[in-house]
Length: 142
Ligand SMILES: [Zn+2]
Image (cartoon, rainbow, N blue to C red; front, side):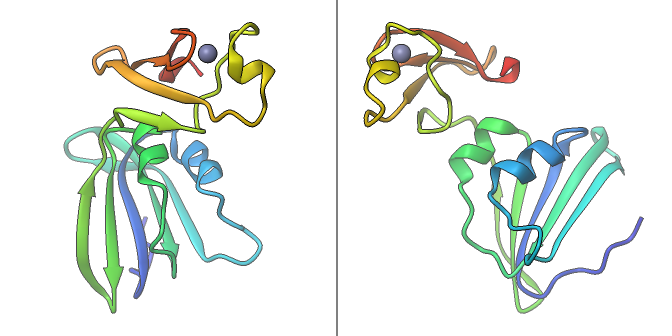
């Protein structure tokens, strides 16, 4: 499947097959107005199958949230038809306001104004711990 390249915007490549839709919903894209292409199950030499997202006229994305959702993806920034920056996503060390603590006794459950802060404890299992109560979360189980 071929989709025209974009002049200005971002291309998120090497997304784990089946995760593209989840990433798209977390990016806060307005699908009524933004020009977006989601390619699902594209063939990929290295990984077998992958998803690809192309978004026109958007250069500001939350790389922390994206890294959390799919740490194997790459983000390509395109300006005037040229690749100007390529970022390989990784699991963020500290995550604010993306993962929510499920512990009902945690201060973040009681006080809505307190941000949910999670710290990476184990990159292999993708395990994070709440900064306040030590509740642990494995991000791929969300
Ligand atoms: Zn907590």
